[in-house]
Image (cartoon, rainbow, N blue to C red; front, side, top):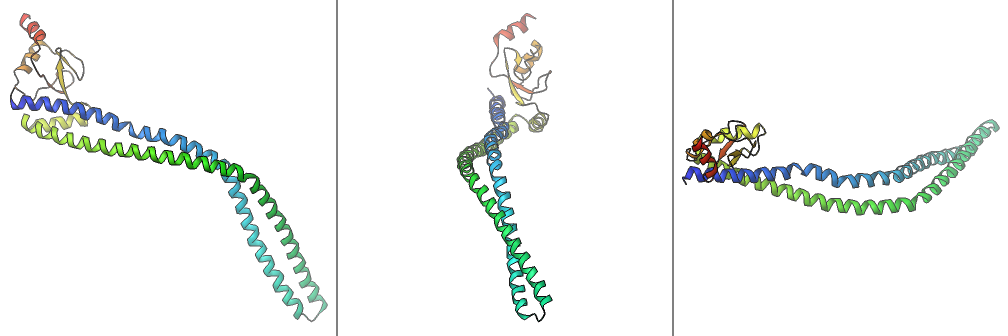
Length: 247
């Protein structure tokens, strides 16, 4: 077998390996999505409890801010009451203090109601947080393994692609650009063997005359007349040859 013929076999076998690796690589996004689906479901369950708890906390903080303002108001008017010189000014200041104290009392009651509501949610919230934490840790482990596999696949494909390029150069200068056109057009694998007289890319049977030309090609670039893939044969197919001779 000539160097070109050997290179054609190597390219075909390597291209088949690249095709298989690319299939695995294309499944990576779906595998990541499947792995994340359980995490997203758990996040929804967590948020069903966390969102109302957070809303209560937000309302508590708003009321605590208003209480601080009310207390500042009480302090200022109590100081002012000591300085007023008329009954009218005193009563007006007293009214402001009383209103601020009533507001403060109401806000304190509202804060207490929300704290009680939070306390009721706390057991469920802690349970959901615990489950979410476990699911997240599991997802991170699985995601890490999938991404590691993705990197390994990409590295293997790069190594094999370089091997293909090297052997395509041995076959002929026009082999590499033609191979690239096939890859870009989606015809993968781009290099396939002829088995039993049929192209393993499209399963079409080669005419006996075409098959005989392939056998005589000595590893030169030869393409399937049906699918245009690069084709090769590792050894003469005696059955097909016999058929060709009989024809």
